[in-house]
Image (cartoon, rainbow, N blue to C red; front, side, top):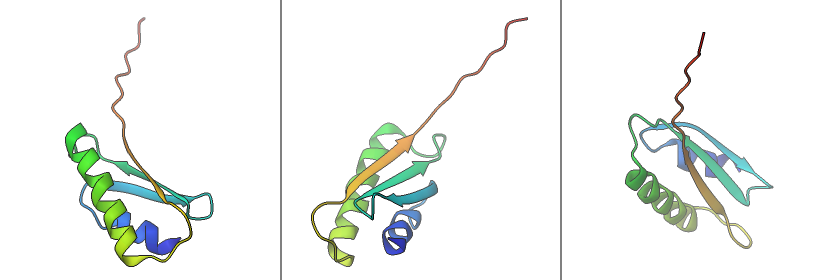
Length: 76
């Protein structure tokens, strides 16, 4: 599981990466100001390809790249 997290964390713009469900899923949180939607899709594909090449695992590994943008305003 740590190898999957290391593969994901090695990409630029990644803030955090977590392998969950016994390594069957990896959630990658990216910086929304550095990575746009298209780059997030490409990053997910690149991470999945690297996992296929470097890690031995049974079944599938789901790669989620999460790019979140928030707008918070207070009314007084």
